[in-house]
Image (cartoon, rainbow, N blue to C red; front, side, top):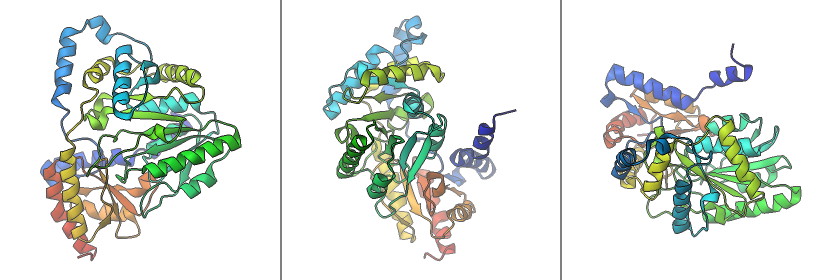
Length: 396
């Protein structure tokens, strides 16, 4: 028998993953080229050539015991130093290896943070729309998720509601920019104001509130947009990063946490993060991929591929009468449902072999998410189906 808590999680298992499996079944039935699966943020762009070269070089030229053996729970010293040096070059920080924890992707990093800082009943605030798995990560440690309703005009954080909902139980706040599912980049002004609110509330409640910034899409920005460095706006910031998107390595599960030395209780927090990595069963991030990151720390994927997909999809959908904001970053387009029930809209799209994710999955009903990290052929091939769907809905 499984636990009662797990029974609920099984019943509410990821809608995105379920749709991904449905897409595989549809591809077998109709042919992969006739199914337009926009459900999963699984990069179609190959990893940079330097990554594959690094893997070969490391395997050939690194002592096997060192390559495959244990290291410190927080990662190889040289790898953490390389990550710190890269951040210093790019963001003017003054980090060293003591500020970095190598993690099993961004999800592993977030779980490590919440395990380290949450007490049962502590509150974590997130701005809708957001990646729904945050709810599970917080619940893993008996925390309570507090949701800030979305500003569906600009999809910037609703700071007035945010300020009202901070309590003496607030332990963490999560931000995700560029955002999944909207593609919006949170502005520097927004982040500065958010930081001011948190500083005021820390003093009011005499407690530390950590701002946890989840940044797997940091490198994916378009039209010259700049993604602000969040620790510049608030001292008690913990940065969570993943190479899943920037290097197209989602299956390799490699990322890091960056913790400025200025955060409250820095030494104690870093010790707790290392212990959390071990006791959660990760033990350490994958050794081989750590060495790959050391060699490829400044490599990035080809953003122009995603930009072409974004432009083609946005132009086609708006021409057909659909309504959406043009994404500034990431590789998602958040489309307003033309009918009240976005789940019915998703169901209608399946008649044309188009798979999208309901916005309610991201705590924002009335919208659907389209992941355009697919082949350009999939984007182009989907447009006739979207046109027929728009005609059925009376948009054209």
